[in-house]
Length: 450
Image (cartoon, rainbow, N blue to C red; front, side, top):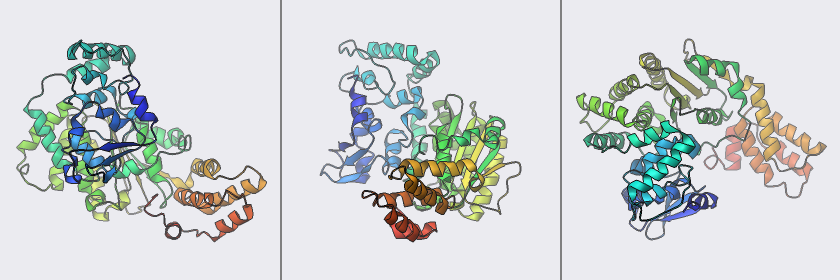
């Protein structure tokens, strides 16, 4: 039992056969989402694929992220290291197990504690034993938060689930889930940058700007992963021009932020639900921007923990929406009961100015240039020799500070590195276009990697 989590984590891919599911319409209601031991199956594997009762592939953990969130309230786009221990414990509540003790034993590994499995001692004794181990490993504050979750739920919980269900939409969080974390060490420079350090200390707005493909999404993904959720509440949204319409609108942004706020704690969820019922619009089927804005303002006014908010790809919503959204977020930060810091990432938008905000232009950063060089050095599969080093330098120079251009070119060149012919590789590099859009078309990689 103690090794089950590691067993799943070490697997190259895990497959879930859903005997009670015909198609995607049935996915959310599957009993699999309510069973205790399936938590480890959901969280631990590197890759997880779901199949219906006829053996047809429904999708994987990334493509079905929104459905999983709706089914069990777990955002699988976050790494386990980003999730607090009380939040992990919350996942197990209300889940079904054949044996009562398994309600605790199914959390071994997930809570990073291990103990002798003893059936027959009862559900309460098993839980107390586990909580004592958690207190020893992770501290009394963590256990107190867990014990608070064991109180009997009331009707407010159902109202909270109803509100969450209305706010969630297909594709929520999928863009962030598809942004790869950077090569180790290549983005650490951001944490040392004077302007970023000043923003981290003083708050306000921090804006990362760069050309298409420069690496803005990867950089802000790195930044949001550094948020210590023991001391701050992290909110994220990544606009997605290639997704559904709502994924590139401010409505999608507001709904995503509200979902994350509601999932941050039962007390806040109850207060927001109560406020929502007082609005004359709460019975309407469609959300409006003013209604979502009122809910957001009310929610942040109830907070006691400071907020770090990361928003990527502002340029992928319309110019009118962008102006209105920025003005609203400025006002939201002012009305917040706690420190509310916002980090944006976008292409260059000279028409949008935020007074007092700090700005980082990727093309002006020597450390960003070094990150590109480090990526080429680590990923281009050629020998370290004068000829190989010269080819690496050519790739970096031709990239013109566009990180994604390098990612594509390295992939293309690696297809022909087996014979080690540097002349042919240099010739192929010379034939590749400088412009990112043309390269994506040539390489036929626009949808598979971007």
